[in-house]
Image 1: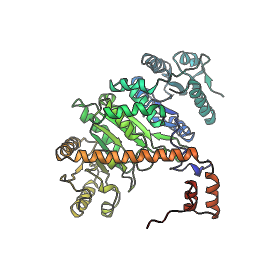
Image 2: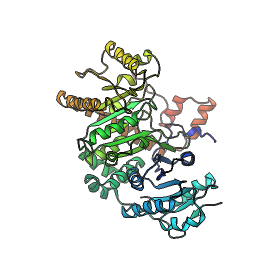
Image 3: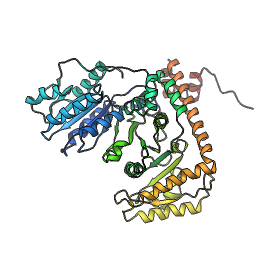
Image 4: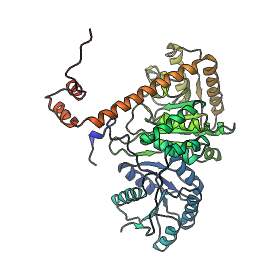
Length: 150
Length: 333
């Protein structure tokens, strides 16, 4: 990583610019968060502010955290196989609470035959396991740009 | 393999003017409180009138600063206090500060992990905040976030500082009550007599009280408190509490202690003094921010001056004066 020493604390670059805020979340009975932590680190290094939810959260807990933290993006990592019902629950909660300006990103182990179901639940992007970090970062930036300032 | 993106129309955001958020914040609407805090953090000029209006509605909350070393147990302690206060039907809020990367500007905000699980915590308002380059243990917008939550009726409001070293004491001019957390096993009793963070406590807490070294840490703090004259003269005798979030021991004692400190501030008249000192810090910090912004917007030749200082054809004082449009400091008689 190139160290930009002009951007050390006290430099003007850190304040006064809205930063993309992302809630990296683990839903349901799924204790594997190495991947979620790696993605959190990638997004941090891309200049985003990442809130990590911790493990074993319900869709309602994730919604409340996303609202209080006013995030632009919820990124959910699921390796448990229950992604279809959990994303359906989270997507409908977001719509019910008028929080569907929040972009929804799905990652983890998600078989191709479930892509349509997730998209219909309100997922904006599915990140396959092979996705490169720079691709994830630019997809999030593009989506937030397209959505506009809130 | 590339990403799979939805082919339907992408989501669109609607920007609602900050003035429209004010009545909703006052009515306690959580999405609007959250959005108002984001606007304060971003420093939008458009939000300044709304924040000014909210400031005038605030001032009722008991603001409690919690500070201490990284990993000392600040988030866990606040989580336990959320549970203790929620039982008394308080609306509890937390502003938890974590550092921004000095390189990317990004941040991992992890305080929430330890705060979010209980049913009570779902009623509390927990906001994570990155320092965004601001030094001193808080973020520039921390106290604006406290204003927003205060105006919305939350009290007590906890400010969790970044994990501090020895000298990040800004929280003392931000909160009414300062809790300094010392976990056991981090050095001998010379640490306890150093200046800085250990001096600013209204309440000393030894965390992780179930660990064997906790008694020694409490004893070192007691020794320090018995020897040194109080840095801030007051009738309040700073208590030293040992507690354990894991076992729950001591949490209710701390809650009682926080409440009696607040009562002491009110009856002794010290609350008014602290409010004034908080105001002073805030006005000067805002002034500093505005001057810096004006400087940044009107300075085009910074790079040349920096290079000259690096080449030693100039020096820091000459360059700074030149950037201010001055030739030399006027000598004061």
